[in-house]
Length: 109
Length: 120
Image: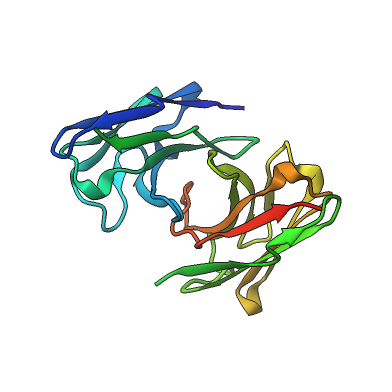
């Protein structure tokens, strides 16, 4: 089973700052199989990034994804007030086919 | 526009069987490559994938819960049903269904979720 470890657990930043969120896999993950989601309180997760670096439909270009192998990064170039939320990475593999990281909470400083 | 909505009981007793229905629109589960998955989230905790069913009736389950889960589809009704046996208080969570598109290995979009509490 591939385990995804996200860091930091909580990130405190101010609007306008740059956010860098990490997702590390216990084994190599194909870049095609790495996704990022945003979840706000009381809401379902929303797909942000798929294939490690492709933005989903309607996602602003301040969100970007990068990485390969075991290290992946979600970057928010300039934080807007609506970006403060919890972010999850997810990988597709084999048995279990899908695993999620434990999440990074992005909070307002 | 793709939409999904979960329905089912909000409260179940320990040892009972949970049956959840995902009713969707905007796509067909008879389209090659398409799937519908179930994911849950205990209060304040992370997401956990449970099961997924593909257009060709291929079914995949989380190994840790496989013995308790059954996923089925009714293409004519645009519904996917998840059953989980022997419910326990630790199964208290919000249960989401989500669309997995053609050749996609991610979920988009998700239903609003339904909170299921396991308590006597």
